[in-house]
Length: 297
Image 1 (cartoon, one colour):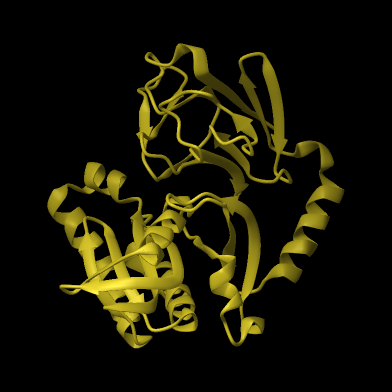
Image 2: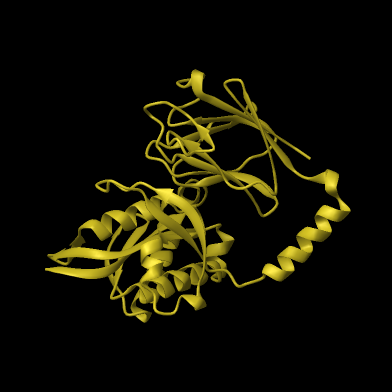
């Protein structure tokens, strides 16, 4: 049976490290707690849980407003639960409203594929959706969104306009005042990130826009290698430091000085001191496409 539904994918961020530090039993309990909370929020907004796969949950909502408000409350619920925040657990969400096919209590179709793509683009504590989904809302004024450009979805000829749904409480005035004071009083103390890739040198500071890496021609840094995803990774400044977030199929590798190499897969890590970022392969496997970084103040 075909139907118009809003599809939501929510994925737990931070679970990989949790299994390493807390052990399998405790990690499973915590992840199950997150998924249970997400299922509860889904039902509160008239949605239905279709399935959970590992640390990801897939839900449907009757319309885009229920899906949007449900997604916002999911983020708030996880962020405001002390046990989850203490363990550095968060979620990333992708959603899209469109045509689906319902069979045997599962859902298929274009909307599912598009929502899954939005989830793959989302980073920790973020909600990504399509501009067309937002345009279907009857009361857009109550939501704050930010354009994220365009993204390609398998099976679609043209890229889709995508947006970031701003779910945090509006503290823009405070942020602007604090930023103005900081810049005026300590202009020279900005944190900077120096990047070097195959003869190119790039400098970023805390005011720089998100820096994207991948095969797509629109990336801030284009890395042409078959094992690199089109939208592979993102470097941005938040909470006082630069972080690299992986969004790829094959993962990313980060090496800090002489420390052991760290593999990221749809997760993020703080960039500190100096090191190397390798997309899709280990540093040893990928000598021609290494991105060197150095953090300074």
